[in-house]
Length: 104
Image (tube, rainbow, N blue to C red; front, side, top):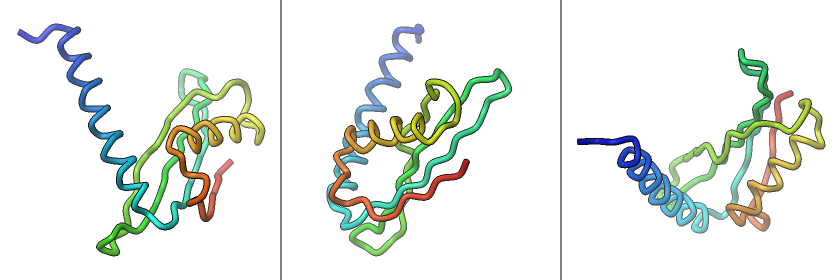
């Protein structure tokens, strides 16, 4: 029988596996480009998403959502930059980042 604890554990484990595979793919990329967008949810929550794009070893375009997070306050450049900065740190992408496109 699946309990809420079992389902939570399965999701957490799969998330860890996915993150490990994503980090390995990003390590092998020469350049990583980012897009980010912010919006307000119907429940009046300010959210921001960060997506990365790269070309893999087989010359295929790949994309992955790195983060969707609630903004601390309004959709200002400073608040959006804070989330982007945390994302760059988490995935250790500084030397590989090429272009960043934002939509506000």
